[in-house]
Image 1 (tube, helix red, strand yellow):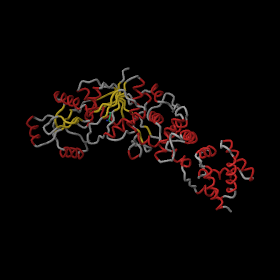
Image 2 (tube, helix red, strand yellow):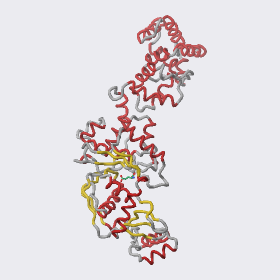
Image 3 (tube, helix red, strand yellow):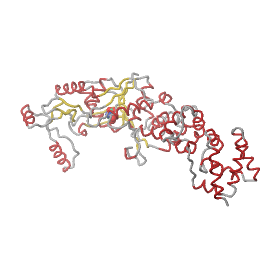
Image 4 (tube, protein in one colour):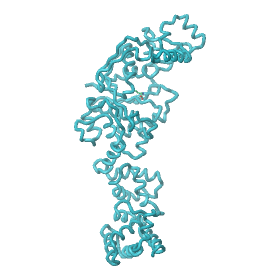
Length: 489
Ligand code: GLU
């Protein structure tokens, strides 16, 4: 099957999770059929479009692995195509200039509201005479160009997700605006529905896959395809992404753009995996972890839900940890590369090149506890810092009876070790327990408090070895010992 699909974001904000999920579905469909995935930037809204948003969108799609085969096409560079199409519609007599002022439109809607009718344009300027047009122009009115929609026109299409769809022309709000025009009536900036149809025809799009919030637009666009005598593509309207209250995920829910997720410490394959599950289920529903290419092998619209997809942070975190913990999905070296920027961002003291082996060891230590990359910042602070502080709990531990003896024992043992290894570190602890007849738990807790400043954290021996490599252990033990001495008894 020949498949040409597109993602068509508007650069009026950063790449939104909803748009990115639509991109994923388009990409999967294209890859499933060895088709073509096209990127088009819909920047006709000059006031709200910004180059930095375009950049954010391109970066976000690339980061997710949504590599496009054609484009990016920019609508702002294709105005001649839209103008030609609008002229064609004007020439055919199915489009016309409407000179209504916004005050008149408001009045029209207010009157409709009073009668309990849905607001719509009442098509009043459909058949203006040249003299009427000239009079409006003489008044300085700025027209728009409208496309005629007949009330009794039925519009149907077989939606690949939602099945058979039916619309009635009368439910589309009257003749629709397809372009602005200059005061003298020349064709100006095209509007979304017109530009999309012209582009989708020009790019020979075979399947329009987009969010269900575009369903009413589809009905209007089908009328435009017919008027322009173009081949109507297939449509697939995907479910919206909802928040925990079942409403469309929006800015109010906090993070919504792909760069936010990236910054929070999700890695691209985990996020892409999660997004695939937002509305699609694999043939084996128990298989929740898969790569994009695995998903592409099975992707079809039969397995896309009609109901909205609830965004589930717990599930995303679970998936994220599955990726971060698995050496096959993310090698230790790649994990370390991914963590370094987070440590740099908070100005931890390290040399990324000279201390690379140490950093990898550290990554290995915390890997099993990571849910998001960013967690590494808090988890490893005690390893990087040159000024360790103790939590209240740790201070309490250092004041305990026996803590001083335990620490003193460890310091002496450490002195006598030529080299610290997992084995010799263990020996230091065992010998201290034995020599001073102490409880092992007390020695371990005191050691942890002294070395890490806390009573909880990653493996103690591994942490000790890491600190030893930076010559931080003896210093910390002595400082804790001084504290324990001064508070003993
Ligand atoms: N620019 C539209 C959007 O961002 C694209 C809709 C479409 O795919 O036709 O929602």
